[in-house]
Length: 356
Image 1 (cartoon, rainbow, N blue to C red):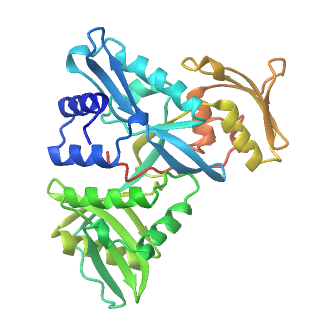
Image 2 (cartoon, rainbow, N blue to C red):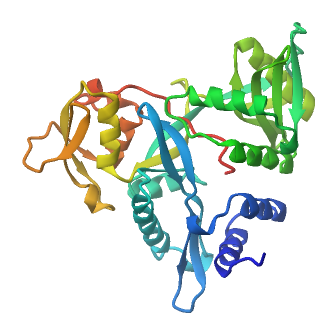
Image 3 (cartoon, rainbow, N blue to C red):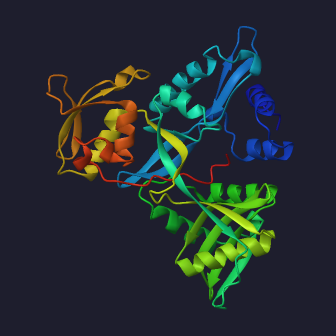
């Protein structure tokens, strides 16, 4: 089927702005691109000068599953930068996602300086990871475990995906991946000359590690394990199957030496506070929220008895920016707000396997 003009324009901008191989670009636009999820800024001459995509992802949040809109491939033509084009496109994206009843947006900044840029647009850093390093691991003494390297999505069994899904769903604030996306992730590993290392205990899956070459090391982008012994077996399998002497892992945040990984933004304050209220019906408070980019979010919110409503006449307990509210609702360092800390549970939000 002939590619649409819009898709071709987005691909050309991608080639111009990102240092990806042609194989990866073709793979991405075949597997992940959807016309309805792409937004393009066209200049007066009809040329595409900025683009982004906003594929929806399931996510565990506030005790249930929601849909989060992931900002992917945001790019501006080099000759059109510093004109506010991407800012306009992002603001349009906010309203498109709100119309689709998507309450939260998430993203992974491509560079450190972009944390500041997206912060000005209302995003808050909430996704961290703990870096781990391993060198020349010895083969586990026990023969109880068997490691297998999967490089072809056609070899993925229901048992492997079921284990992956079960372990991911145990995380209270985590971006999730369905079966189709899981297969795409494994295909991306193959393109990168990596592999999914699956650990079996007998005939049962007990762990897995998503690994790919990363300079002169191997990067484990995600690891799921039943125990520390399984983790050691999986990391040894990574070294063995990928012929590596050093491994760098992005592990779940542990609170020490964490590094930033991604950001989130509340798009619909009332919808998200109602989700919170349903999950915590015994908690009640009144907030004033300010959102410069989505004025419809600015107002006074009354949370209590399992519901949320707006009442501009209420006396408020605290005034929050949209970034501050996002951090609280994601459970990201709630102790930074002593007044509201008792109402919010500490959590370690996590994002991984996003083809970034």
